[in-house]
Image (cartoon, rainbow, N blue to C red; front, side, top):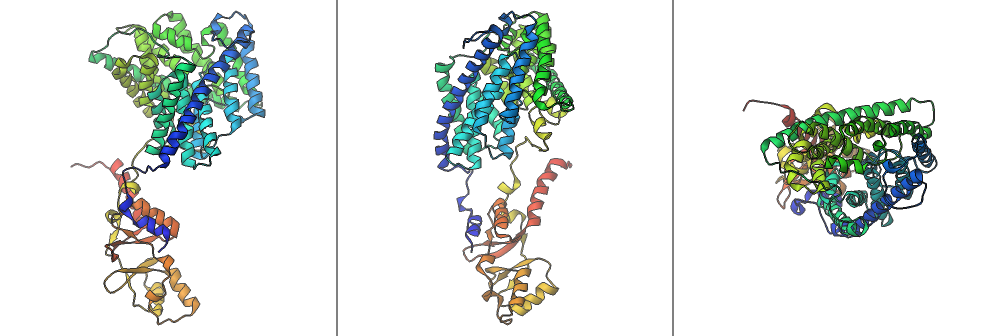
Length: 584
């Protein structure tokens, strides 16, 4: 019996989870990756500050500044174009992977690129994003740091020649650590990893991601300070109808998220029809950014000050309307042009602005409803409801509002999945010809066992049958390609197939010999009753045998046969359970 067969037939090693000691090795590596993600976040924010000071204040400084404090006059139209020209050159002659907001590229690397990211991306992504945001691009730093932190994790894994699955774990760990470094939202970062990036739920990936996030969180007080990023006063909202109102606002924000996604890809299609090289698209889109800056400078840059002002309730309705309309337009046009920058901060502003406006007609301060809108739009746009709910309360420190942010996230999520086929993240990947299913279910191949789908009491061949009779049987009467060969007590001797019969005839050996004497060791794969059918499927792939005998006991008495068709039936059973509706 082959080694592959031995692995498949032994169900004694089954456990609830597939973790082994390498999980501890990955957790140790995650400390290094998490540290890299935290420092990457610090470097990115410093680069953004340097770029902002250079473009808008003509000075070299790392001090954080607001673009709204500058006075450059009509140069507000020119500066974003200069920054976008630089980005176009970096993408053309550096790496095309720096284009876009980072998260779709990270997902694509995970699912289709064996989680390999290059050092060039790790270097150029934060540089290009700093130039983009610093020159007025209406983006956030979260997408770039997810890509940069992911690159740190991927490069670390490649350096030590880890497997593709282990590279994925460290890539996502670096991405979650980077997000924690920027926003100080460890729980939301872990949930983002689970809901958007990992595409699995295993201890091997979950534990290292949490370790990396904790490492980044430990470094953050030294690098960027402590406390929630956007604290603001809040009212107690304990009545049930507050959650009902949050649910309704979430549904409205879900429609907003769907509209934004649809408009984004229409604009991107328009750029693809331009008769110029894509290197020039960011500069063309930056013209709209500059015009938006002339209308209201609040729409320029990452806009973290706008988020704080929305939560504080200190913005005039005119400014909020400008954020909702003008910010949306310049962000969509700039992002559709293929420049470099994140989507999360603009989404928070747009969801917060709509929540603020609706909150003017609801009890409580508008800042509270702005927070609710922020939770909803992150859930609806990114299809990450748990992340959206926790992100909003971690950003503000108001964990008592969690029931309301959950209500808003669910409302937005429900509307989004019904209205939009794909999220703002996965649509970009789908347009490259790749479909992603973001639903996690237990594969029937992983929990069904052989005895549940096998054909019991299968037809067998006696080991005493002569080679001549066996050849005749396969030529004239056989309904299947292979049959178990058993002794007089029904114990498995081996597996005889049509190819075996043809070989016996061609070889011209003793045709009167019993087939038990001529079966090769390689033709004897089998499984036990309680072997998971996923293991049987692996055995079929490894041995090339399409019908596996199922045995019981130490004497290996044949009790069934499991074929490829049986495996397909197992999947169809799950499909019928999803679709068929019957009266009980």
